[in-house]
Length: 436
View 1 (cartoon, rainbow, N blue to C red):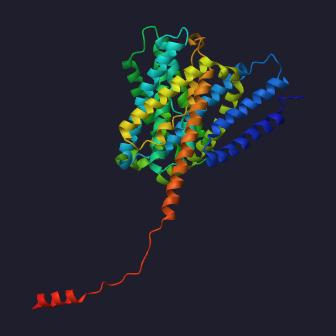
View 2 (view 1 turned 90 degrees about the vertical axis):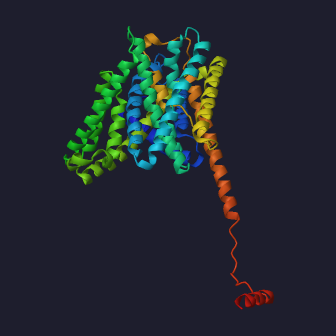
View 3 (view 1 turned 60 degrees about the vertical axis):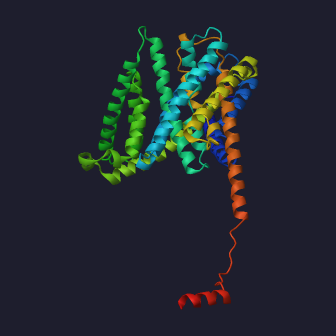
C-alpha cells in the first residue's frame, strides 16, 4: 500500500481540517477546547499507526515529525499573536484594562515560574535551579491559542481581559525564556542591561518597519499583496531571531499600529496614510490571520498528539510533579486576581490553560541542556488538566448566568393601572381652612 501518495496526503490533510472545523463547533456548544479534541485525534492516529505497523517499526514518529512540529509552532505563534494584536484597540477608556492585564500577566508569569522551578528543582534528579527556571517558564505561560477561541461566551469585560492577559503572557513568556536561554548559553551571562538594550532596539526597529510596511503596501495594487505582507512579517521575525532580538515584539507592534492607525498616524504622518486602502489591508489581514491560525493550530496539535508518549502519563512521579505545579498555578492566580479584582474573579481564576507555546518552547531547549530526569509527560499532564479545569469553569459560568437569567425573566415586573388618589372629607376641610 502506498502510504505517502499525493492523493492519500490530500485526503488525510483535508479530513483533519474538516474534523477540526466540527471540533470548533462542538467547542462552542460544550466549552470543551477544540485543542483537546485535536490532541486526542493525534493520539488515535498514533495508536492506529503503531498497531498496524503501516510506517514500519523502525520509524520514530517523534524524531520524524519534530522539525514539522517546530515549524508549525513558530508560524502558529506568529499568527496567533498577530491575530490578537489586531483585536487590541488602544482607546482611552481601555488603557486601565490593558495596564491591569499586563501587570497580572507579568506577575503571574514571574511568580509561577519561580514556584514551578522550585518544584522541579526539588523533585527532578540533576535539575539545577538555573535549569529549573528555564524548564519552568514554558509551564507558566498562558495559551492564547486555547483561551481566545474559548472565552467568546463570557461577558465583554471578562472576555477582553482574557484576550489581553493571554496575549501579554505569550509575549512576556517568550521573552523571559530566551533571556534565560541566552544567559545560560553565554559564558559571561547576557545580563539585564543587554536584554533591555535588545528589547529597546527591537521596539525601535518594529515601529520603523511597521510604518514602512503600511506606507509601501497601501500603494501596491496586486491582489496577492496580503500574502506578500505575511511573507514580509515572517521574514522580519526570522531575521530578528537570527540577530537574537525579541522578534515577537515586531509582530505585536505591527498588529497594534495597523489596528490603531488613528492613534499612530497623527500630525504630519497622517498625510502619508491613505485611509481606505489601509483599512482594506487591515480587514484582509484580519481574515488571513484568522484562517491561517486555524490551519496551523489544527496540524500542530494533531502532530503533537501523534508524537507524545502515553506511557509517561501513567507515572506516579509525573502525576505528583504535575499536580504540584497545577496547584501552584491556581493558588497564584487566586491571590493576584483577588488583589486586582476583589471578589469578582470567577471564572477568571480557572482560565489558565497551557498549550502551543508551552510545547514549542520546550522543544526549543538545546539538546545539550536537556535533563534526562525531566519527563515530557509533565507537559501533556499540565496541558490536559488545565484545559479540563478551564472547560469546567466555563460550563459552570454559563449555567450560573443562565440560572440568573431564568430567575430574572420568571419574575417580571407587575403592571397596574394608575388611579388618582381620592381626597377624603377631612382633607377637604383642612384645605378649606388653610385657604381662609
